[in-house]
Length: 253
Image (tube, rainbow, N blue to C red):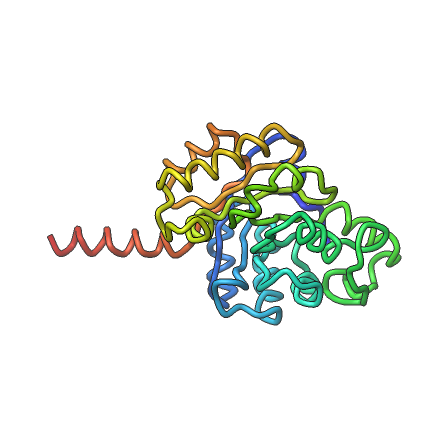
């Protein structure tokens, strides 16, 4: 693992910008990385990506100097292990619904003494060929980015406890799943959803954790930056959709 440039920027107080990628196509990942993103998130939750494919996507991102991340399928140690063994520099863990589950996520990501991640000679450790394995584990613990997704009422209610958990770097609001949890699927502007996001925002910004979220537009990203978020993600699907529709609307008008 090389230095995690995205984590370094967050530590320095900078904002970082990334893009979710759902497709098992390294050329598309490389092309996307070349546009100037700080990180790419390969989506193993809402998509079909598996660790074998993510390993190739990692290489594409690293080739262009972009931090490779992935959203894992679920908050289980064996799942997180298989994703991280591909060489990812960090993970999004979805549906982290309690402080105990947040602690479980951290322990699944980190090696001893903080965690219990399984250790082997894989791509993540350069197959044990470039440095002593003890040095690798210390560096991996320091560099790997842990993003816990806040997506339910239970998580919102307990957000103060999340900010006290050592090893979580980013608390990431998932607007769509949060709206669903609150009984307003897809209505991210509903007063109940806005109030929940405001509560998370106030607590996280006042802590030593980074606030993150998903946005659908540059205007939304600017609004969240003004509110204190510094880890902003969007999706390739929106760019593909909007670019194609705009082009076709113009040529067919």
